[in-house]
Length: 194
Image (cartoon, rainbow, N blue to C red):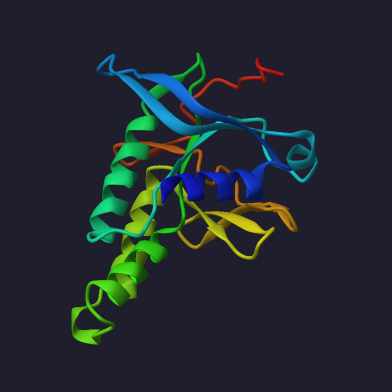
């Protein structure tokens, strides 16, 4: 099922972003080789709408699983490791999971728990998880329609093709060290693979 999600993300984002599939990288702390589904950089279209000239990574996971929420958590752990990685000499400033977390929860609720309210994950847990992930600069990409998507951190919209870049400063890019919030962990990088 994951190939379908990879194809879908390419369909949704390819007019706005350059997507490099199967980007090979290295985890900077361990030296382990890794591979991300997509290393991405904004095209002129997205830059004109305010998207910063920064690199980001997308990991695609299929919610259809006997343990959908566990699969989501594994995917989130995977993208967290990408925050401390370098791909083809590029360190991404942001990482995203596709599809959004709610799809994994919904799949479990419908297929594992048979829509029984007492067994379902509640929305407050999902919201708390999203707020925590925002602090780690881990976002979600949601499909709003066949041709429209939204990049989000928690409940804050970062970008969509219709409205462009959000005006929230440093959304998805601030780094927290202890209780301090720093501007960014990356030096500005131009597009070396033009």
